[in-house]
Length: 379
Image (spheres, rainbow, N blue to C red):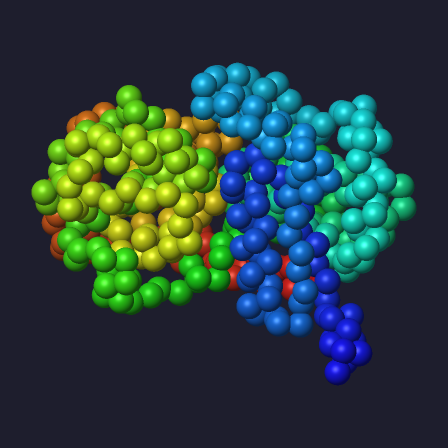
């Protein structure tokens, strides 16, 4: 029996998905694609790794935490760094330094797992694998770009195929020298639980939520809800609107909100990290969010109108611009914006018509199965 299990494992197609922990979206995309592949084809075996954290579990959290603090306290610095290297691929010296630093460990990971395909959802592991391919690795490499922009750091000559979110990203990669036939517009992968609608009644009963106009407020995986923002103003609407504040892994913010009298109301719910985002989006009428690529794509999949606040300079600004352009979002600029939208979602006929229009637009711009199918074809 044991030998039979080994044969079954070895006969499966093996896919290695590599990410990094700089923001939660990259790894989310890797897990979403992993689950999507197995959902459609159970004969695929996948492994998701945050490469830096796996290779150096001591230093990686320190570096990621420093980046997180910079994003929170000095977002303009992050924007300057993003723009300074935007147009050109990462220089060969930097790539070679990374290669020398992580070569032995990365080779061991690839040799031990022996994948038939490697997929990278973050630029750093993509650079590493590209360098290994330059020196002889023959395993095909797919890069999945997890935003609605194409920074130069994503570009590597050794990538066999890019899977990107939009035609705009495809055009920007071509401008950076990537061959047109190596780019497929597939959309960003999302978890299979987002693929189909669920029963709103069952969700409300399970999560103990009311049937009333509902707004989901998200701060991203790091829960970056700023205390001085207009988000507190939304509590003014708590008698007529259900407010769900999702602060992710930010336990400090969760405690602060729970201690604030403004947020103590039966129609206000404050939650931390949760596996129920798909269900919360399903029963919501409006999403107020940091414009991360994954969250926006999940909102798109649910045909959910979005208000964007405080985008990090760089890719979040580009995400914002894209969704505003296709009619799915608006910048949250003032309390007037809040009042206008909160009045709108109370008009059930108007919000129903809007959701129908967004559903039509979603079907034009996004198919949640497209990315998974593209990988399957590659296999």
